[in-house]
Image (cartoon, rainbow, N blue to C red; front, side, top):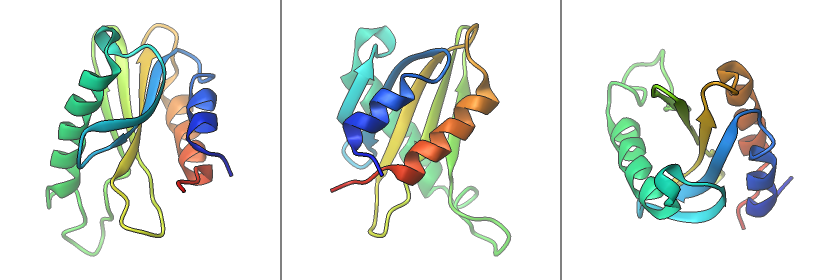
Amino acid sequence: MTGIDGCLAEAMTIPGARGASLVDWTSGLALGEAGEGPGRDHESAAADTAELARLAFENSAFTGATARTGPVEDLIVTARGSYHLVRFVETGFDSSVFLYLWLDRAEANLAVALFRLKGLTDRLVLA
């Protein structure tokens, strides 16, 4: 089990990681951050990413409107030089938190990053 700071420090060891933050998608506030933020601004990136996460999480097409699908787990946005990954954190309470990872596309391996994010969020303890 790891806390927010440990989770973010470990996220920064993922190949190609430029920045990471833990974000509350209802408020758009970063609960913790490491590395750089896109545009050197973690706060704006957190608010913008929270808006995207909220739209995906609340859209019935993605949230399990049928018995064969479940809630949104990840969002992947690809840009010319980067990947932006969002991994929703599952908790025993009504969680509205996600782990955001900004990756340099030339250095990152998307499959490895997704696998590592899942492990990080599984071990994350929010107290």
